[in-house]
Image 1: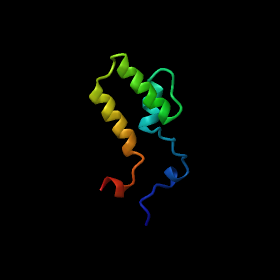
Image 2: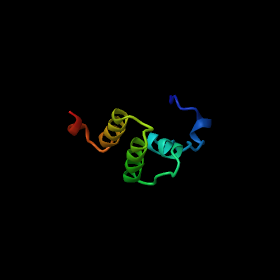
Image 3: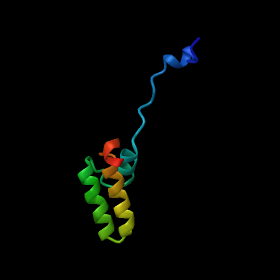
Image 4: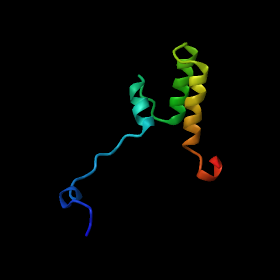
Length: 73
């Protein structure tokens, strides 16, 4: 017996936005690529809106998302 409910099987799941999509829509200008986002983050740091450690953390998070499990290990 399946645990799936037959009514939920017919529903189309809503596309979940990634954290990158949510972050980019929250920042004005809506960057369309990662490079645009990194440039915007660096500009934000230059303007004094975020600290250097915050910028490094966000750039690191973007870099990790491109890594494989083997790279991380």
